[in-house]
Image: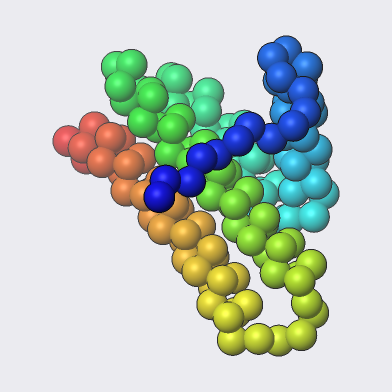
Length: 129
């Protein structure tokens, strides 16, 4: 038996898009206020994105350099969402809460390694070579 998914009641079209944009801004601002790591990553991105436009020799290189920079911030946002959800559920220490938080943190670490690897693969051969 196939389960049907019904659209959630509420706004559609442009009003829904406006609400979604507002919710996104609220999430960005909340993360900015509450997460030092996110503030550091945004500050770094403000410097790195113009550098990527300058140092990237092709559109693909620029897209990769900017894309991995934004990816770090995206993963940090998701990590913050996991942490907030776990903290909302309970302040009690629980092994599964630790696994969820540690796993989200590991995702941030991997995104940072991907950032370093991508920037290194594109820029190091030029500087060493």
